[in-house]
Length: 227
Image 1: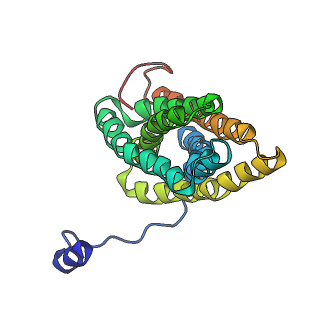
Image 2 (image 1 turned 60 degrees about the vertical axis):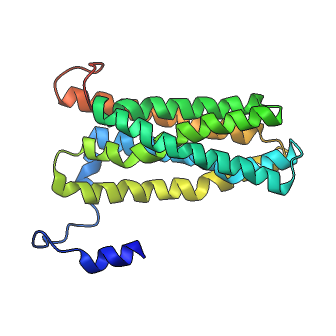
């Protein structure tokens, strides 16, 4: 209903500009953009495994009922609200890519920690940490693209391109993890390691994008500046 009201009341402030191309292949010639596209793909390849399999894990491994297993998803998504807000606010101060990389590392590390969870209480605690960390990854992902693109007129096209790349990661990541679980006879360890490794590798590519960006700015690869 609120969107209907907004649609009826909104006014065009400026004349519409000429439609931008759907794909700008030249963007991939910029190393920071290419590194970030790969890094985002790797991060999101493992991100949604927990969302799809946490409840199943709690039933298969911990013996929770179907109803109780859904409570974990509520915790995961509820805490994620704070993860989407707090890191984004920090990113406004120190730079989005400067906070995205640590959040990706935290997400991957917490995913590996899932392997060592053997109690229901521990699983709830794990859900809190993962929900916060992954919320940061989800909210900061588009913002980093803006910081890597100098020309505002190209931001829409370049953002759409990376969203397209990431869509394939979101589409295939959980099925691959499910296939790993089946191949290991119902054990989740391989899938957990797969998801965690994807996120850590994604973080490395994101840091590589930052290095390329800072070098282009002429301040050195490890200079601490807002990016």
